[in-house]
Length: 180
Image 1: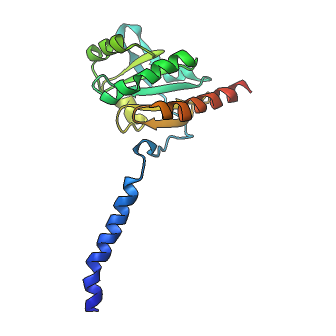
Image 2: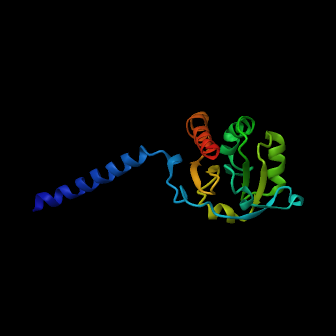
Image 3: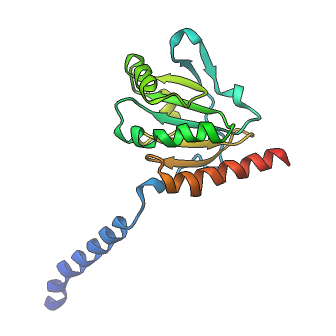
């Protein structure tokens, strides 16, 4: 019995090391989302600039569209921005930009400097819309189908691989579903 008690710390250490090793192999961009295949939260948000009125997500009913959550203070958002510009040029899918917990006075010059790929630019200063979508941080990208269901979520900045191997095929698949 005394021998087994001496081995207990070693067994606990091995178990913790195994959990840590498993955690280190996980991809943080593959965080599960309870929204996948569920209806996207309906929302109304102010547009940027504010004089352009409000955006109602129900206006997107019947369309495949993308919600990209970004902010001017977000370094990784700068990294993914070229892919959003490329997407705007390659696909006719509406790209809705949700400016998350940011000031319009910072967001609008950021878009002017880097280019504006968005069909609609929305103000989420308070983070309410992001909260409804379960946003962990920025950037995050949601693909919403013509029935208003979230079909794909990408956490973190889009890169060449996630853009070409995940996002574009998912868009094309949903667009084909709409056509058939």
